Length: 461
Ligand SMILES: Cc1cc2nc3c(=O)[nH]c(=O)nc-3n(C[C@H](O)[C@H](O)[C@H](O)COP(=O)(O)OP(=O)(O)OC[C@H]3O[C@@H](n4cnc5c(N)ncnc54)[C@H](O)[C@@H]3O)c2cc1C
Image 1: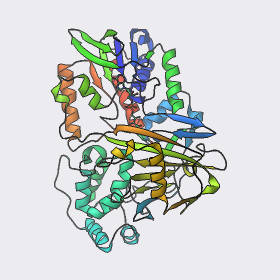
Image 2: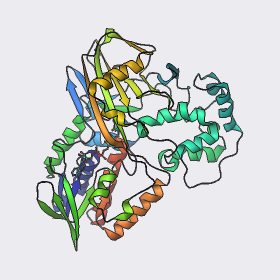
Image 3: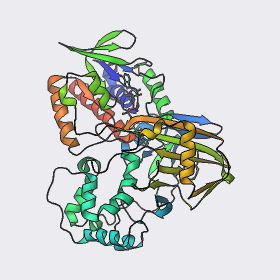
Image 4: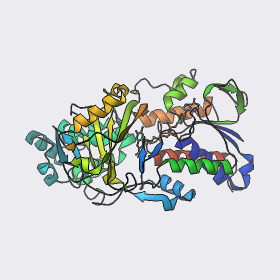
């Protein structure tokens, strides 16, 4: 079986790793080549190690409770490198003030009357409206609606703007009134249908206070990529970088790929591990892949700034904040990284990482580095006092990086997978555009596809 993997991010690398690792006695029967357009593998995983700092340009950690990433770390023999986040209070920035995320809330949804009454994030009317969750009947059965519409119906728009939207924006950075509820937060649908009230349905479901939920690697997430690449070389996978797949032709028995250097090659199986809009561009005749209702991916930028610890005074104890949806700022979040991760900054130093870019205001990422640094420092000045310029700053732009899962996403995905299987057999889609945006979701998709392909080929040991 000759397999081409297009894209050398975590999804493509994981698919290759598990295809080889799980094929056991049939390992030599599987010939895999990964094609990556950039010089380095890893896609959005990029770590800068500088002056004792470990700075992540893209993802900085993964959720522990989704097992695929933890399992991959173990499969690569990297468990001794694992570290967990330090827990601390996080806040929501509204009206220039930091407000506590109500204790006991689940993704911003309060689970007690007390939490609603005590929060400074809602007006008196907003609190009264939120309490209606206890009395309004549950929604009629539905296939899918937007996250915003669902929570606005139960708690009112204020709570959506100031609690739910900011907490979700770090993951989806999109328009909450377009985001699919069934795909992104199905557990809330179940909670509502069990109890009628979401507040009641979610009681006891909040993560235990002060338990770490995330993990990363001591020397940065790039180590995961470096070790994957080493393991793939040992397993006999061909890794090609600085080569872009530009064309794909369907043959009677397989596919021919055309590359940016003029070469071409034929494969039995093609795995697309690239964002969906790039798949659409490579298969212009496959109309069914297009999705007119989907908003374009949102662009974001991260701005990491290194300081002497003594020059940075935070208004409160904690690990950072996210901005309310209505806050008139480019800044969407700030992590006090040195308070969250022991490995990120050397002794006596502080590392702040801010985010800009949201649905409706993502062109801001194309401002100059200097503008972005100054603007985010200015926008934080009410809550973080900084008495010196940063030692250095690293701006990372991520154009069209955050996939948007619109209402009806799951039905669309099922439909295109069926059509692909019929019209383009042996052509597969994995990655953040499809079945979860987090690193564990991407790794899981790569591993699942490997298992499916090995099963079909009768290669299970
Ligand atoms: C700023 C930011 C912060 C994030 N934070 C977190 C976090 O903390 N935790 C978490 O779990 N997730 C986080 N995510 C999400 C996560 O990083 C991504 O969903 C995941 O890395 C996507 O991996 P992928 O392999 O599917 O795609 P990518 O990483 O995008 O890899 C695709 C690869 O394909 C290559 N490519 C594209 N076109 C071609 C072509 N034609 N030919 C050859 N190669 C091609 C690209 O160069 C790229 O290397 C974050 C994302 C961003 C942008």
